[in-house]
Length: 354
Image (tube, rainbow, N blue to C red; front, side, top):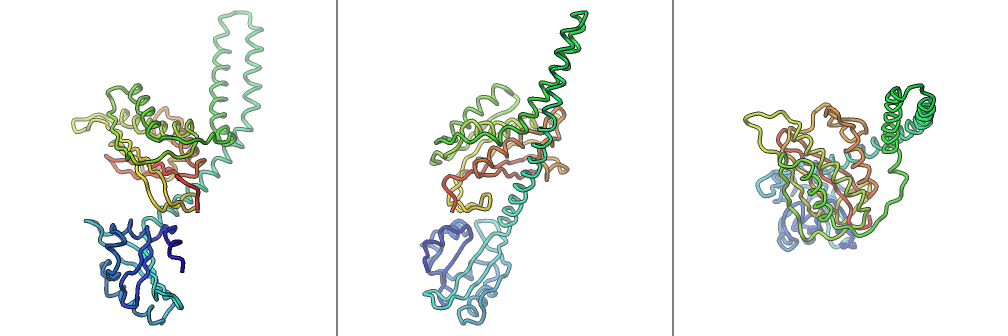
């Protein structure tokens, strides 16, 4: 068995001896259990879980060749939290190690499934909107042209005010149609990008727009390397999400218990991440966190769909376009929200998929 290949897996893997002691742990196991390989080596695998008797029984039966594999639910202790996991114990024949134990967080599996569904749903909506935009473009052009011809024939210049309204509204709708249909057709201008430079430019724009209404905090991981991407589109994606957060803070009803609005930009590196059905060893996670009222329940499942918004006067395109730009880079935007804390995470691959 090539144990080095196990480091490419997103799930935690132990190779254990017939007594159930760990002799090998992959990189994902280090992350999941919060211990180094050296600390895990020689440790009884069963005692890492809240139900060691059940896990040890599965290990004993697998080592004895009494079944090929068994799956069971368990909990593991990590720092002060208990994490629910799915544990698969596999008996290996003709190998140096008689038993392999695979552990995966149930929450991560559910999140991955949800992200896959989200990608498919958004692509279906984009296709619908592209078709709609195509059908709207020609009538809009004719409407604008007719208004210009009518303006040229008007007996009074004062009446031009009405034709100008028609022309300006046609232009506004044309711009909206272009935004809905245009980005998917332009190839990426991929170059090395420093994500912190993009974050700083976004912070400058948000500060200029919202002044003292919103406080910006930075929590950067200075070790994050450059990633390959289209700087303009990544800039627009980050700006759309950050601006959306700031707008929600400014729009919330003020009261005696209302805390000052704060938006935090945080960068981290994640390992063994599944994105768009592909495995990546390293990914950038850019979190944009605010202390606003949270995402309303009635739009949570559709928040990245085009034209969906809970804010009066909103277009419903900001988050949709941000998701589009991030997906063009092979990544995804996910979020968690409750009153007082909303976190949007832009997850971007930092190297080719495996």
